[in-house]
Image (cartoon, rainbow, N blue to C red):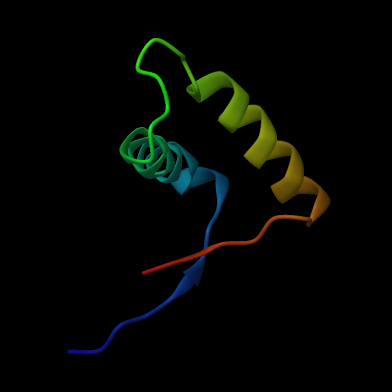
Length: 57
């Protein structure tokens, strides 16, 4: 079995944000805060500017 890595794109961003929110919740972020809009804005802007890159498999 081989693992192929690829650069995160806008197509996978919603799944990536869900994973990030789960991580933040495990680290103590409050459940009553809707993080999706802020994270979507942040990652979309920085991906477009080229200042955020992530790899997925």
